[in-house]
Length: 156
Image (cartoon, rainbow, N blue to C red; front, top):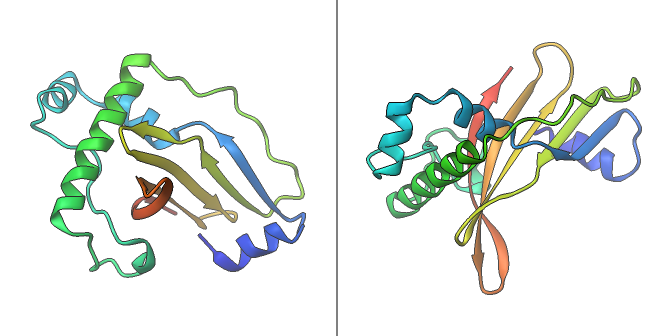
């Protein structure tokens, strides 16, 4: 996400818009497009969900990865999140257009919880082929949610 633009959002810049109620687009999309064989493999713990997790402070470095234990935990938890959404037959709410003044759009989906892990689907667009999306993984530690990893999901 463009950090400078996000800072302007918090200061009331009307050209940047934020939506905190977007659907779980990435999880819902994956859940609806998975084959029955992949879903069965997830149920049997033979296949994980998201991989390619990065530490939160190293988001721009593609070669930086979380440790294998955390990677395994997040892959399994994200698989359970995908299965949960698939079982609920999640559907996106009706499309809500952005105001015309929005040049940059940021969105955050409501969290998907799996035990002590929460996944938040995020994204931003700034027109044309400008934008990106990520899933943020938070762990509940010491009575608070802590960002432990991010996984890129798309880029324009």
